[in-house]
Length: 218
Image (cartoon, helix red, strand yellow):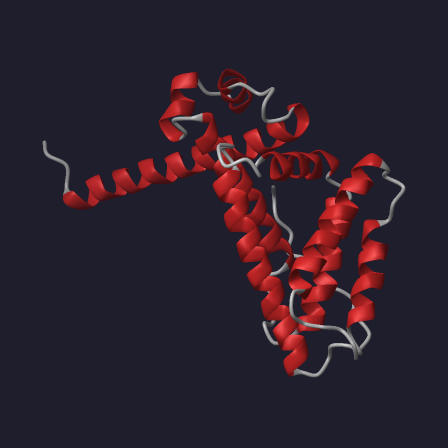
């Protein structure tokens, strides 16, 4: 007997939902695998085994290792944004800066992931690196977001006297990335404290406590 159209639609929707869940599981597993073993030292066979699927099943969702890496990097960004920034008021630049400090505190609990990003961001400066396009796009988006926050500080007359807004977003990203690399080499460095001190030097009002982060499963 032919299936009713509604039943067929429900079955297809269930199949897609199951596929999305499996894809998310693969990405989550690969994220931790890349962080632990390193991207270069992790094979697609190992990624499939860690996710509990066959290599063919992995290739169905991610035809190449580069595709899997791109999904892993984008998922890490999505989790960070959802946990620390998506719930913020765009007109509250001081709150945004406070949550940037909160993100730095969180990163201090994730040394393997921080190391993965630090290594890949440096290696991806080569145009033929599989993550080159991703990091170029990510840094452009990050500069744009920092510039938006700085412009809001200027609009609200919160930028400290003598601080130049032009190019400040590049300087702050260089500061956070540089401190992060030094912290990887010497974990006694307090990244969050240094960042708070630097950010407080830029504004005329005390930085607030960060808003409660959204609890997410990574």
